[in-house]
Image (cartoon, rainbow, N blue to C red; front, top):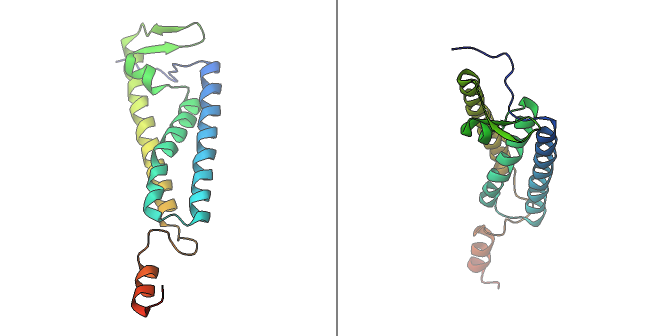
Length: 142
């Protein structure tokens, strides 16, 4: 097996597209968290941010590593002249291994960040928390 020093499968245009998409997705995800925090949404609903965070992190890591995981899975590249089959099987294998690492890193980072967002305390009363309603019911004040 031939090891290639820095295998890439996307060109400059693909990297720019992924960095912009990734940063926009991360900003929207964090904005969603801020909204959830201010409104007082129960922390369990913050798990909905996992997929957008994963997608945003994945795009940023793809841009940084110049590796598209979908193209790597297909055994293709797009270096600015359209999508083409990778001619070297060793390079194809190297890109697929890199894609697996990128997905693992992105999943781990998204899980860690989402866990921190879920663990952040609710601001004021959490809307789905039964404790304030139960306390009112027990006191007889409605």
